[in-house]
Image (cartoon, rainbow, N blue to C red; front, top):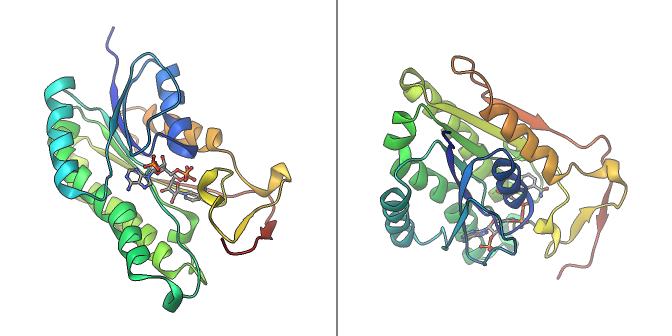
Length: 234
Ligand SMILES: NC(=O)c1ccc[n+]([C@@H]2O[C@H](COP(=O)([O-])OP(=O)(O)OC[C@H]3O[C@@H](n4cnc5c(N)ncnc54)[C@H](OP(=O)(O)O)[C@@H]3O)[C@@H](O)[C@H]2O)c1
């Protein structure tokens, strides 16, 4: 039986971890990339401990992945960081990290895996954010990376749709993950104040399971209620 293969970035936590679990449960082989080791022992899961902001290592890793696994049917660009606050108060290092991890790494990984993805009539799934669609006070740089990722996906789909490649932009709003651990705000405990990583993973699965010929290009997901709590800045 044919088992498709997905490359997923940011599998050590939150949304990426949930996507990895959901795809493995549906008999996909998953190749995960993140700096930290992954704390689950899944059959059909292979981990590459990589910092995606290092372009040289990323390039060498994709070469190794293709050599060792031979094919890729989906690339899920999920790894991301969040730095928020008045733009003049962000450090140069924080802005550089936002652009490197949230935008540059997905562009490079997509370029490096595009030929095998087209050959497989596969999919690129970009985990953007609701902030890709609306302006975000105190999140200008983060929103810029996510709007860039969304625009990249739209343009890539136009460029590559005739090859059979699908490009999906998933835009979650507040999602309950460790993303908020170092931030000065977080969703309230009310279950309606945040969507869950499992719901985002389900949206990814549904987009990937769509019949060839129909392409889901955007999924926007929002919590039922807007309930944020402020915390002292770490
Ligand atoms: N949570 C939300 O409310 C929300 C809303 C909209 C969009 N998103 C987006 O969803 C994606 C996943 O976020 P999450 O909420 O699941 O956050 P998370 O729990 O903090 O997970 C972030 C993941 O990204 C990986 N990562 C960060 N920097 C990396 C680097 N330099 N190299 C390799 N991997 C790196 C982390 O792995 P390591 O630290 O092990 O490297 C981790 O696995 C992000 O793109 C985020 O912007 C989140």
